[in-house]
Amino acid sequence: MFRKSVLIALIFVYLVIIAGAVVRMTGSGMGCPDWPKCFGYVIPPTEEGELLWQPNKAYRTGQVIIVDETLQVAASDFITGDTYNDTNWNLYEKHDYAVFNPLHTWVEYINRLVGALAGVAVFVMAILSFWQWKKSRRRVLLSWLSVFLMGFQGWLGATVVYSVLAPVRITLHMIVALIIVGVLMYLLFASSEIKKKWKYDKKFKTGMVIALLLTLFQIAMGTQVRQFVDEQVKLLGYDAQGSWLNDPGLEFYFHRTFSIIVLFLNVLLFMRNRNQGLHHGLMAWIMLILGVEIVTGMAMYYLDFPFLSQPLHLILASILFGVQFYIALGSFKQKRHGQLAADA
Image: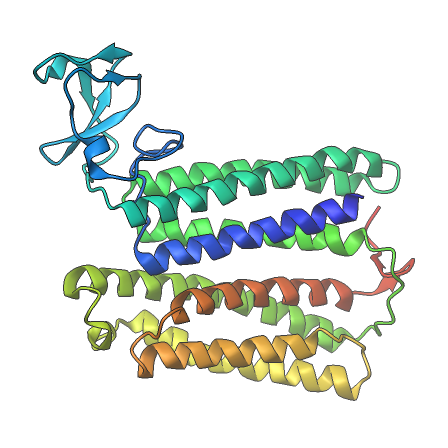
């Protein structure tokens, strides 16, 4: 039961990453300018008219309207009169972004909803972990660490909105998501009852750890490239895909060149796994994911960002990290049917 709950939590975390990729692809990061609600509502509005001041309408504390390109927050529960009275409203001071786009709002809202469901899944997993206490106290502690990290990730999401999508915070937001993936991958690995036939190889283990770190670094660099693209979209518009990377920054060339190193190292690991008979079957998936990842990267550059190429590129990178992490765990010396020697 515990292992199934870990798997479900992991799936939901990946769904959050997918939803976040769609948010970035559609430019919906500010679709909900406040947090945790959306324009002060549990379920956001669908039309701009719902966010305009209306006479003889009941408002609840915290609900938001747009007035003269500013967000105004209801100071208390009240019913409006025939004219607008600014004493009933407080200026939203976290930022000055006051734009309503129904598509952006609902894309971001769904992203938050999936995030909330992921939080519930992780919390349920943590509750079930108490039944693992006699087998492994570490599993219990890591399960509750996951709960803490999900809460921290939610707070980070709020700071991303408050900063109006600051690049550094977006990068940190992504890295924390991958840390959560890593913790859940460990729990999935450690709770497996299946006997593994992996052979221990020190060079493969060292190389896989390096490959994992390189992937993490490459993802961090990719978020910076993505931020550059976002800025170009704002400057040139969505209809100018062919010009988004006409004059990219140094981070783009570094990210592109670094991908050759990542590919080369993983090819060497794939060959060593096969030649030494280490039985890490997931290495074939690593090569497949890397192949598609490179194709999507080339498509964005040479084919002017085909539909879904951007989110697919990010999603594949996060899946690559998760699979590499699982293989890295299996590359350490084993005992007791595939559990890590340190698991106690």
